[in-house]
Image 1 (cartoon, rainbow, N blue to C red):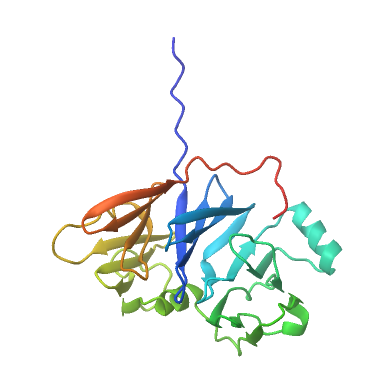
Image 2: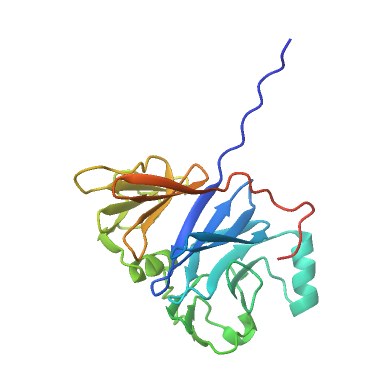
Length: 272
C-alpha cells in the first residue's frame, strides 16, 4: 500500500528592487519559511549573481536600492538567542530589529542602526550617498556609521515610507491611495502605475499583504497571474517573478531567466 503523497514545497517568493540610474536589480528570494537569499541581476547582460542567505525575517518592502545600484538598505528581524548574544558581544546592546546598509548581493552590514525600540526601522536613499533613516536618536541607535555617506534622521514621527519612495524613484506613480494601508481589503487597494503595468497592494483585516498586477495595454498580454513581483527595466522590458521563477517579457514573448526554487539555505546557518 502506498503511503500518502507528500505535499510539494511552496514555490519561492521573489521581490525585486530596481536601480534608477543603473542596469541593476536586487532580488529577494524567500523560502523555505523565514530564509531569504539576495541575488544581484545585471539587466544589461542578464547575469545573476547569488549572494547572502539571511536567517529569520528580511523585510523586502522596507528595503531600498541606491540609484547607482551599489548599495542596499534593508530592515531585518531576528529574535534568536544566538543573535542576541552576538549583538551584546559586538555592540553591548539588545538588538532584534535593525536597519543595515550593505553592498549587494551581500548583507554584511557596513552601516547599522538598532531598531528595537518598537518604532524605528526602515530607511531610503535620497541619492546614492544620502540616506534618510527612520531613527530619531542617532547617537544611541547608530552602531556603525558608513564612511562617505550623509545620514539624515527622521524628524518627529514623519517616517519615510520605503516601498513607495523606492517605487516612485523608478518611475511608478500612485493612481489611487486609500485612507490607510492596513485592512482596507480588495475594494480599496493602494494602486500604482508604470507604463502599461498596474500594481495593487492589498491588505486585509488580518494584516496580510499581497500584490496583484495587471497589464493595461492592448494587444498581447503577459502572464501576471500569481506574480509576486513585476517591473519595467530601463530598456522597457517587463520583468516578472512567478512561482519562484524569473521571466523577461518583451514583444509578446516570454523567456525564463532563472528558476530559483532549487536554492537551499546552508545547514547549519552561517553568519552573513
